[in-house]
Image (tube, rainbow, N blue to C red; front, side, top):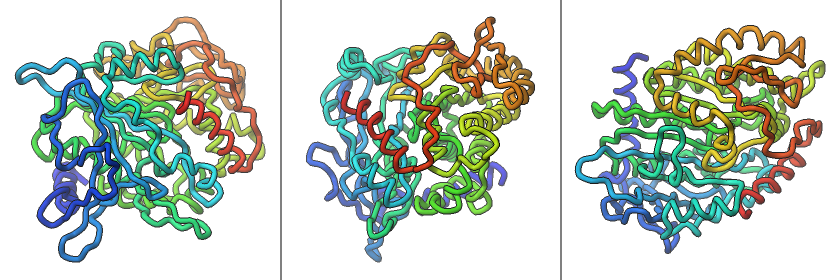
Length: 482
C-alpha cells in the first residue's frame, strides 16, 4: 500500500470513526464526578501547571442506537475510565510551538478466567486521583521521596526539557495492552471488557482536536504501556500527514512485552480482538495474527512507513523477570533443549538485532542487570549514558552512527550467545567490555553498566501461568501503593 492509498484509507476510517460529529450522540453518564467531559473541554480553558481528569464519552450512532467504532471507553470490569493531563507550568508565549508528551501506563495482561481473576485489581482505574490540582513539579517532589517511580513532566532527560510539554497520561485498566476491541469477552461465565483500544483511541481524538499542529510528540510507556506504542505512532503520524502536517514523533518504549508465543496466539490472542485497531492502520492482521513473529511484523510495518527523522527506541534489561514470566505464562517455554532464559533472550536479541540492521531510525538501550520498568522511565534514568541515548533518539541523525557501531556486534554476538553463554561484548557508549550477571543473557546493544535495580527472579521455572501472574501482582502493588 503506497502513501496515497494509506492516507485515503486513514481518511475513510477517520470518517467512519469520527468523534463528536452529527451522526453520533455522546454520553457522559459513565464518567466520575471529579472528571471533565473530554469532547466538551478545550485545552485553552484549562489552567497551566495543574492536573485534570478527563473522561471521554461513549459514542452511539443517532440512527440505530448502536455504539460507534471504538466508542465505548471504560475499564475491564465495566467501571469508568479517564485520562489525566496537564499543561506546562510556565505558559507558552505567543505562537510558540506546542509540544506533547503521551505516557501509557503498564500493568500486566489477562486472557482467561484464571489470569483475569488474579489481575482483577488492574481491571479498574489505578489510584491516580491524588495528582488532581497538583503541578508536575509537586508530583515530582512526591516521586523523589517515595522512590520506585517518576513523572517525566517534572524532568529534563538528555536535551529534552519535558517541563515544556503538555502531558497526557493514559491509565491502563483493560489488560489487553491498550489495543482491545472486545466489549464482552466471556471467560467461563466471567465477562471482561477488553476495550483498551477504545480508551486510547478516544484519548488520541482529544489530542488531535486540541493540538492541530504540534511541533513535537513523544510517546512513552512501561511494559504493557510500551508494547502498543508503534501502533499509536503510526496512527498519530497518519492523522497529521493526512492534514498536510509533518509532525516529529519519537518513541521511548520501556520494557515492552515483545514476544508472542504460538500457544498464546493460537488459543488466547483472539479474545482481545486487536483486529479493529490493527486493520485501521493498514496492518495485514489476518496474515500475521498467529505468527510467532507477530510483534516483529508490526514493528517492521510501522518502521517501513516511519520518517527517518523520527527516532524510535526500546529500553530493556537483559535479565527481566517480568517479561520472562509472561513469556512462560503465555506458553513460550517450548524448547526442552534450551533453558527458558536463554530461549527468551535469544528470541528477543535476534529480533531486535535484525530490526536495527534494517532500520536506521531504530535503536535499543540494554540495561545490563536485572529489573523491569516503572513510570517516567524511572530505572532507565538512573543508568549511565541513558540521557545521551535519549538525545540520540530525539535528534535521530546520530542514530545512523550508533547503528554502524552495533551492527557488527549483533552479527557475531547473536551467534556466540547460543554457543558460548559467557561471551562478552563491546559497547557503543563505553569502551570496556561488559559481562551480563545472568550468563545466558549477554548484551548486544548499548548498555548502561551492571547496576541491578530489582532482585532477579529470572531462574523461576514454574510453568503455571496463574502462579506467575500472582507473583507479579505483589510487584505491581508495591509500585502503585509505595
